[in-house]
Image 1: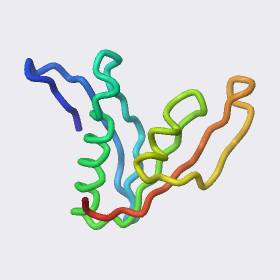
Image 2: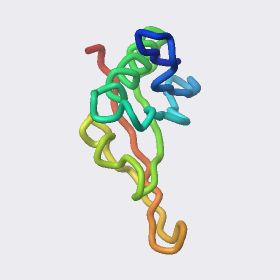
Image 3: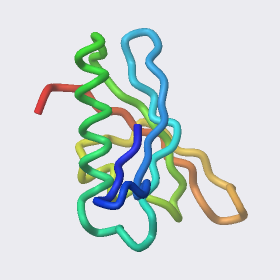
Image 4: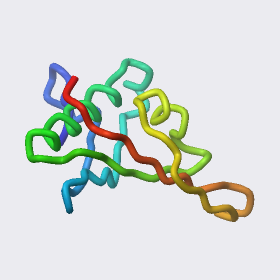
Amino acid sequence: MYLRDDAGQVIAGLTGKIFGGWLHVEFLWVDEAHRNKDYGAKILSEAENEAISKGCKASSLDTFSFQALNFYLKQGYEVVGELDGYYGTHRRHYLRKQLTRK
């Protein structure tokens, strides 16, 4: 799924899969010029609602410590696991969220 500006340019995107009643978010990105405008939250919420409409009860994703951990925590995700040692000193965080329609 993609989010476009008024000129039709893609400014944010999300890819994921539904498997076993779960949404797994693979990639979520927002063009740097359009960050801090809630576009990431909007597209994630849309994906979660679509997953709910397809019977999903939960969502999972992962992110690195140098990426978007705080963003996902603000969206209601919780850390369920971590691995150390990525790129030397960074962590990979695994998160989940129970889905409810907003």
